[in-house]
Length: 161
Figure 1 (cartoon, helix red, strand yellow):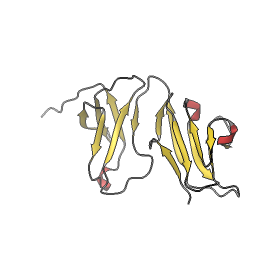
Figure 2 (tube, helix red, strand yellow):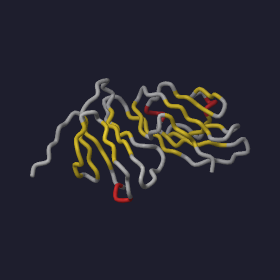
Figure 3 (spheres, rainbow, N blue to C red):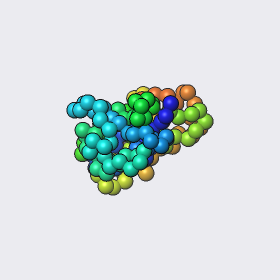
Figure 4 (cartoon, rainbow, N blue to C red):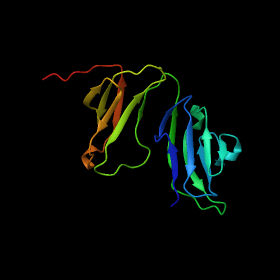
C-alpha cells in the first residue's frame, strides 16, 4: 500500500509546529479526516499542496486527525493518526512508523516553552531515567521495549535504593 511520509517523523505535534506530508507515489493526494470535518484533501485549504505533498505551516489543535494518501481513482494508502496538542502541553515525541527490532529509538519530551528542559521518562508507569537534554535513546530495541511511554519535563527524579 502506498504510504504517507511525515516530516518531521512524529505523530504528536505542538500548536505552532509545521509538518510536511508526502505521498510515495506521484499523482496521489494527501487527505485527512478530523473531528470537525468530513474527509477532505490538501486542496481544501487546510494545507499548501505541492505535487504529491502537502505542507501545514502552523498546526492548530483542529488539525488532529487521520491522514492518508489517495489516488485519483480512489485507492487509499495506509493512514497515520496525528495529534496536535495546545499550548502549555507536554508531548512525547516518538517515531511515526512502527519500529523494527534492533533499531535505536529516540524519545523526546517537548513543551511549548522555548528552552530545552531535562525530562524524566517512564515506561508503563515505571521510572526509566532522567535526561538533561530532554531526549532519551533506547538502543537496539526488542519486543520487550513495547509499552506506554510518557515524560515529565523539568524534573529530576532519582531512584532510591
